[in-house]
Image 1: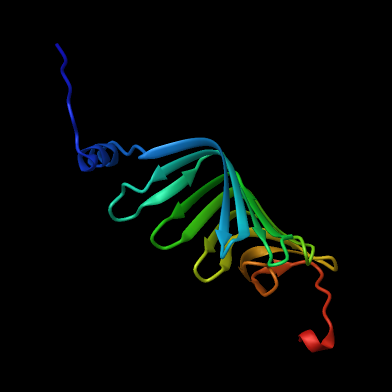
Image 2 (image 1 turned 60 degrees about the horizontal axis):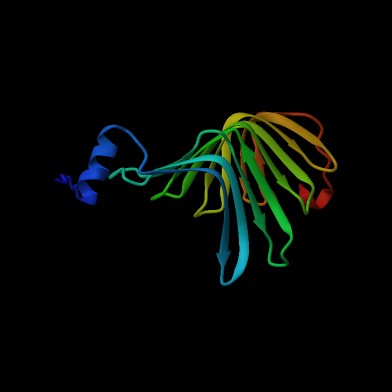
Length: 171
């Protein structure tokens, strides 16, 4: 004699959402994103949770850290983003990265370090109101509050200390 129960996909998703459980999870992920056949980014994370079953605010969680490497059009590593914890909201494409956040622009040799960073992936924009250290080949800037383009080439530093080397044309 055999017995079985069946639940619809919607019932399972609703159950998981009610219990605040992810609809999926993975360990040691390595994801390659391609755009028009060209690799545009690589993502590595030890643990990934998929909460796409949330009706209002679906998200992905990386509770043990994340590393994202963007690749330029010539196939060279452009920017590396890493942190101890990350959340990405699927609808808005805004991510929060926390804990030892480091962004490195390999081409310009600039590095941004902070404890919390928000990344608007639609606008290709980073911002933080936390303390930061921004290192360029010429200077090191510390402060609270930083906004930047994704590649760290255009930036605004707030409440800063440190020496900044500029030329007359930059002013």
